[in-house]
Image (cartoon, rainbow, N blue to C red; front, side):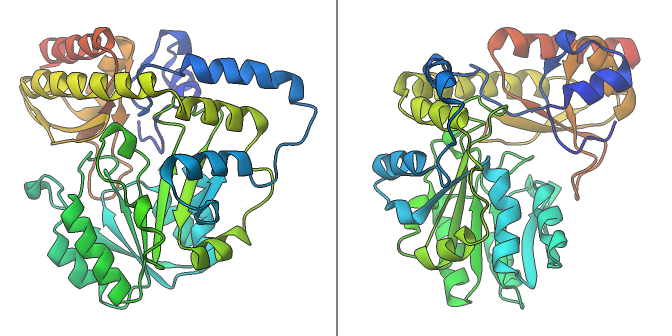
Amino acid sequence: MQQKHGGNLREISRRYGVPEKEILDFSANINPLGTPRTAIKAIMQEMDRLVQYPETDAMTLRETLSSRDRIPPENILAGNGSTEFIYLIPRALRPERALIPMPSYSDYERALSLTGSAVVHFALRKEEAFALDTDRFIQQMQKDVDLVLICNPNNPTGGLVPCGEMKKILSASRDSKVTLVIDEAFMDFVLGESFRFQVTEYENLLVLRSLTKFYGIPGLRAGALYGSEPLMERIKMHQEPWTVNRLSQAAAIAALSDEAYRQATVALVREERDYLIHELGAIPGVRVFPSQSNFLLFETSPPLPEPERLFESLLRSGILVRNCASFPGLGPVFFRVAVRVHEENLLLVQAMNKAVRNLV
């Protein structure tokens, strides 16, 4: 049952014998509205240009982001999803010791270990609903660490570090000469204050942004990295050419201009997240943790059955959830579910209630 990433329908289908087309995927945190029509139209218009190379550095996408955010293009890199930069940053900066709150996205530690960086875990406490204790975190950061990586909002917990608290961490990291990397892959769902606008003021700051999750194009891959010019120059030296293809760039640029899609997404996620928090939280044996993002973390306990039986029961109902056994600091009794459209969220709630009736 242990999953390294969500959304791997082929592997789940093969392992459990459930046809892919019959699986409703709650394991991947993608925009429930799907790919915007503006992006699909842009992809179709770009098809005749596939015989031509894409831009080596995706400058058109960088300039689009620059114009939207009023940040110089020199402070922005575009890549093959934000994951490209998760692996590129350790290769370029070669940190000796990195501090990461846990539980969090597992690829951070993998990327750092590939370059020989030592990883220090900062434990987020269940009794504090996995909220980041800023003062305690800063104390740990000041103990012989040269890079800090924070997912905000955090995956898989959905917790958001308040703006004022993140400013304290940013200021302390600069004073300690520590590179601060903030992964804002899910920030568009939150409408929280992004720290990408601070990269021209803080030479130690890097901010990751995903375009695939909010704009529903994970099959194409598109992401961006914002940072101070000195850091960006070092990272750019290690970036391979052509990591953003023509279709990906066209789709991302078109989606970024789709304001109606953005507003509809934020409204839907807020309403449906509240619905799921209420309905799942009412099921005996389910504890839902506070979330500001487009997904929820919940813990199971008696009278619910053991995690493997619950997972398989949901799958038999056509529902795939993300078991969190692979996240350090969690375990098999924790599950993460994406917020989807209401009809699909209703099916999840019904399947959970059915599992309780059938397995208790």
